[in-house]
Image (cartoon, rainbow, N blue to C red; front, side, top):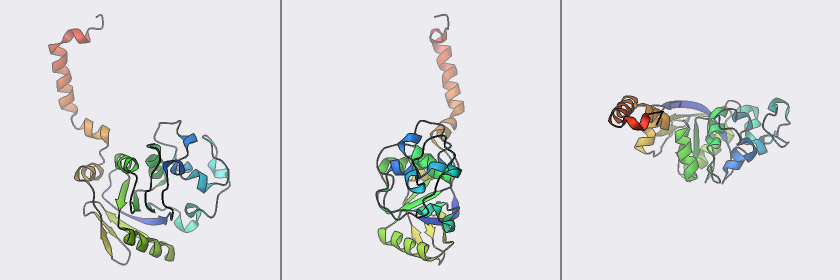
Length: 215
C-alpha cells in the first residue's frame, strides 16, 4: 500500500451529498477483484453519457461535459472535496480502489459512511472529516480559483489552504500509523513474518502427524 505523509494537490469539488458506492463505481464493474482497472470507470454514470460495461474502450465513449471531473481545469486533481455522507450504500471495497487508481490521495467531507471510511484507510486513501463551514469555505475558494491546490499533512493532521489558513482534523492513532508507513492488513501481518515462521516450525515439531501427507 502506498504510504501517505504530506500531499499537495489540485482540488476537484463534487458538490453532492449522499454519494453512494454504486455511484462511485457501478455494480457491473464488481466482477473483478484485481484491485486495478477501475479508475477509468470512477463515477461512470455521471462521467459518461452512455451505459458503461466492463471491457469497453473508455477513450471513445461520449463524455458528460457537465460533470466536474471532465472539466479541463480539474484534470489531474488528487484531492476530492465532497459533501455529507460520502461513500454510503454497499460495502464494496472497489469504491476506494477506483478513487485511488484515478489519482485521488485524499477526500475531504463533513462526514463519511463508516464502512467506506474504514476501507479507505486500508487502501491508502485518506478520508478527512472537517466541519461543514470549513468544507463550505473550501468549496467557495475552489470554485472561484482555477488551479486551487491544498496541502494535507497527515503527521500534523492539518489541511492548509493556499492563503495559509489551516484546518485540523482527527484520525485514529492506529490508522494514522498504518497510513504513514504504508501498512495494509497484509503488510501488518508480514511485520511478524519471523514470529509466524517460528510458530509454524514449533507446531510442526510438536504435532508432526498433522502435517503427514500420507495421513
